[in-house]
Every structure is written in structure tokens, then in C-alpha cells.
Length: 536
Image (cartoon, rainbow, N blue to C red; front, side, top):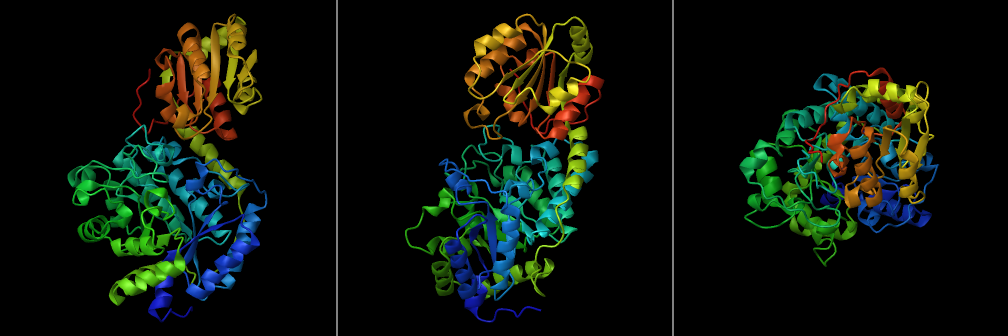
């Protein structure tokens, strides 16, 4: 059994979870080892590389891919655990699997895709949590900073959207709890985020401070509901979002991460939560630029009620500031919560090196089931019948947007519906020539592979492509399959005039194949849009 840290300084070190990067230099690694040894830090939060950390990402720094990331991650964790006086709680944000941070590892569907599953299929969400947990354990990670409990009720949200289970509070709560239960059953800690609810915002908190206008009554009615359910089920931890809620904070625009009334009064006292509270990453621009004195941000975040300081950039100064300002009782409280989580994760006897292997086959089978149960039919006017008739009359064509015609959706259709195929890939096709090529055909199957999951710049769909789509939908019998974020649907001109409109959510091979089978067999779709959408 690990020796419990004795001094207050050793205990305060446990509150710090600095960021580490899988693809870091030897010099950076040694600096992290020094922090671990000298300051007895409690854990680490892994990212892919410095260029991929969210606040840098918007600066378009080049991300270098590394096929050895998984092996490297495992080695890094072993190395860091070896030099730790107290076993480290290793965390990562892996909402849709390790693949969110690590190349060549299993990828699971986004939360919005899971949100399209019927309630009766919530066992699939449990399985996703369980398999992600096993993938994390295989590399030595015991703490997933997921899932979101945010209710996405703002289509203009630049950062939550596809990461939320949707806008129905009961379903978001149910699915978040299933995901957590899956992870917990394989011994991985989870985290509900971003308290008190990041769904109804239109600012990216990595870059600025979103402000929620709701009153406490409104928040209790909606945003806070999944967190309350999580508290009833003893959720391991809750992450505080970098968002301001003036109604909870005497009218002030202070980030929740730095707000005593939001953490101590609302979360602890009114909602009765005594589990671990973790800050959102303290390098995010909504808070990182507030204080000139190093260590002050860390002290303010701790003072507001956070137990764990995620992505803390000033460890020695932060420890010093907390020691100078905090009461021993408050230090003990936070320390005990962290210790309890370490006990639950089973790392105190000895921090296990990664155990187990990645099971890609199991992931593929699970993704197959999710595809079969999430695909959503939005418009259906006897499309299969029309398509086969057009095929018999040689008036059927296929158009693939943002993927070559060599995609698995078309390959599946070609078993019975071989027909002329056209494609528009980024910046290499003149729209007018495609328009001419499609003139002789009266029925067109269109696959739209949405380039980006985030809504910025119309999901990166070029204006000219949207115009072409609008024209085709107005003048031809179009059956449109959308592989991507359903929030793209309202920006498609004349979408209401489609003969068939099917939302597929992901572009995974299994989703493409299932979409093709669905069209050929005209099979029933049991998926349901997880968000309300107005078509043009």
C-alpha cells in the first residue's frame, strides 16, 4: 500500500494534474519527471502533442502524426509512474475513444450519434463506455474526463454540438450514466462535464468566456438536470466549465471555474455533491490570461472549490500560493477526495502498467450495431422504388461530395445499382462541369461527407457546393445521405425538397455499408434525431 503523503506540501501537490504530450521531446519528459519527483503531483492529463491542445489548435499549428503514439504513450506512463513518490492518477479526455488523442487506436461514434439510438438500445452506450474503459486500461490510464452532461440546445454552439448526447435532458442523463457505468465496471473513473452546463452557449471557452443568461430556476429545470442525476448515482467527478452564469454569481461575469457561489454554494451545498471536482483546463484562454502573477490562477481555482487543477501551468507557484492561503482543513478535504478516487482506481498498491490489448474486432462489431440502430430517416418518399426504376431506365447517377467515388456507400449500392458516378473533392472539381454531367439524369443519389464536425464556416462546405446541392434538390429527384453532424442539415438549401433524406452521422466504413444496405432493402430506420432541426 502506498504511503499516504504526510506534509501539507505533499498533499497540495496531489491537486495538480499538469498536461503532458505523447509526442514530447526528451527535455519536456525530464521536466515532467522533475515535477513528479519534487512536487509529488497527483496526476497527469495526456494530450497528443502541443500543436493539438485545443487552445493552440485554432492557431492551425501543424499536427505531426505518429504511428507509434500508442506504444509511446504506454512507455511514457510507465516511466512517469516509476519516478512518482505517490502513484499518479493518469487522465485523458477520450470522449469517443483513445482515437481522439492517439493514432491507430479504436474509434467509437460521437455522442450525438449515440444520442440518435432509441432509449431501448442504451445498452450500446454502456458497451461504448466499457470498451473505451478497457482501451484506456490497456495503456495504463485510469481516469477518462468524459462524458459530457451538456444538453445541446443551441445549434450555434461552436464547441459542444456533436460531443453532446442531444437536447433531451432525460436522454442525455440516461446515456451519460450508462457510459459512466460501462467505464466503472472495468475500473475506470469517469467525469461529468461541463458544470453547470455548456450547451446553450455560442462562444468557444477555449478561446473566450461564454456567458449563460439563465436563472437558477431555468438551470435546475434543464442544464443542471443531468448533473443532479449523476450526483444521485455517485458520479466519480464533475468538471467545472469555463463559462459565466451571472445569475449564480451576484450578477458578475466570473468563470464558473473561479466562482465560489457556483462550486461551493450550488454544487456542494445545494446539490449535495461531495465527490471530486476538477477544473476544466487552466490553459484555456477564458481564464489563463486573467492573472499576471504565476500561481494566482491556481490558487483562485482551488479557493473557488476545485479539488483538481487540470492543465495547471504553474505547479511550484500554485502549490506555494495554496499553502500560503488555504486552511489545513480545506487542504485535507480535497486531498481525501483525491485519495478516495485513487483507492477506487486501484492504483495505491502499485500503479499498474497498461494491461490488456486493443480489441479492434470487438470495436467493429459494436460500431456495426450502433450504425444499424442510429441511422435516421428524415424524408422518405418511396425512394427505393424510384431509384430502382431510374436504374432500369438508365436515368440514375450518383454524386459523392468530399470523398472519392471509391467509398463504401457507393460500393455497397453497386452490388445492385451500378450507375455513372461523379465526385466533388476539396478544390479540385469545377462545379459547372459536374452540373452539365448530371443534366441527363433525373434521379441522383448524393452522399455528403461533411468535412468538419464543428459548425465553423458551414462545416467547411464551400458555398459553391451548397449552391449546387440546392439546385439539384430543386430540379431532380435527389436522395441525400448525410455522413456527419446533423446540425449541417439546416444549412442545406431546399433540403425539404429531397425525395429522400437520411442522416447517417459517421463516415466509418460500417456506417457507410449500413446506409447502402438500408437504401437497397428499404429497411426501417429506428434512429431518431437527437436535436431539433428546421430544414430549408
